[in-house]
Length: 418
Image (cartoon, rainbow, N blue to C red; front, side):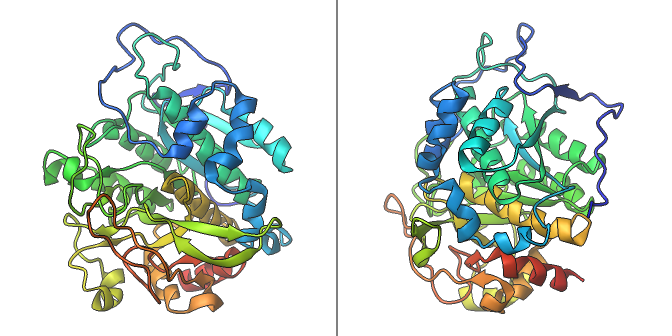
């Protein structure tokens, strides 16, 4: 079954489409050098430390602290594949600074070693020409963005192996605060305008407090609404600094903060868990919260209608996050693309983009395992002396509803969305 989305590859807009694996030189002054750097997960830094695609692919299981082959078993996707629900006819997009010019070589190597079909991957540059990491003046964090790109694509391809994958690369680094977001908003608008993706995953974030003021942050809201109005679901990582986060200068805030865009009211925020798996991918014990999984309560976004019932339990004064949690042992950069892939499978079965799923997700939550929701009840995200939140029975601030069993979750989500 194909979706109703269309991919306007020849649209008359200012977008560059790169043949994957091809690098090109940037004109003088286009590299957008900056002294600040994005706060990367350990997994992204590990993959970004080598330029060789085969070496990156071989390091992936180490980076995610799990055998990629086992994730299909862990999240129970095989029953969906047996019904032909494998991502066919859909598109998953990751929005990243710089991307990886050699993503095709990487994912081909990863696929061969993990018994996956060849990936259909394409690079888009809707915000302007993206330089190569080797071009003069390009920030040093470019290579780690390449590692982030590889991680996102590998997680997409592992759980939605037949989905088209779009690497939507921007020519400026998202660091802390507003830096890099304007170009990323151009990327979101492009995907929305051309209905080019079923799901967008953003494995990045910055504390709300790093923006210069509230208006600067909320000026970005309309872009996320535009995406969900176009039928695109947007997911984002909840962060890797537990209950706190980093300032623009790299130091810790030393207080509770939450990450944007995960905090945005139109985004599904995804936290991190630790999996305890047998060699065949089955669980030895229930998932725990990853201790550095970002989570807390926004001071920029009020409690949305779909959180009002759980707010009676959490007593949160604003939008709490995450909403759901998946593998994040080496960073929630793993978690967001994994959940995005699960939503993509649901989108394929629906034959259309699902758009904003949070209201449906919260109605499903209390249904427990029958709805594919698996509670996460242990763990705490206190970090660097900043008190955090504890996972517990039912919905909690730090793990959301818990994690998912895809075979049950996908049909339950679609039933709730009808």
